[in-house]
Length: 130
Image 1 (cartoon, rainbow, N blue to C red):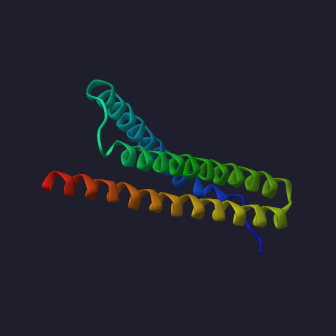
Image 2: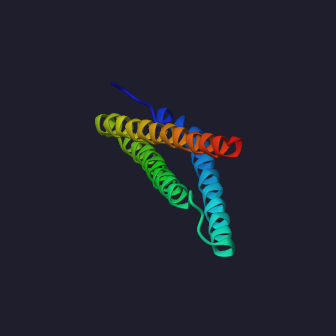
């Protein structure tokens, strides 16, 4: 399969926007953790605190993995472009495929993090209803 240098370049804007969204998620989680810590320091123990900590820790780990696989996908796209430029078309196609796998993994982790965060919000809403 022949691939031009422009093929991996198509992913650059998509990966950049995805990384921006992941950074926003990370900042929101960091803010939530700091707020939870301030509430804990001010009022003492909360019965749901352990569940909240576990949930936030899982989400934080997922965001870290999402960001790492997104950066790896971006890195592999650049390597693919370099290999294509240097005339190593077969290697470039393989590296591009690996880049797509990393991107797919990152998106799957993102979906999992979304489900975890919405479940946490449902628990909070149910607690307020009771």
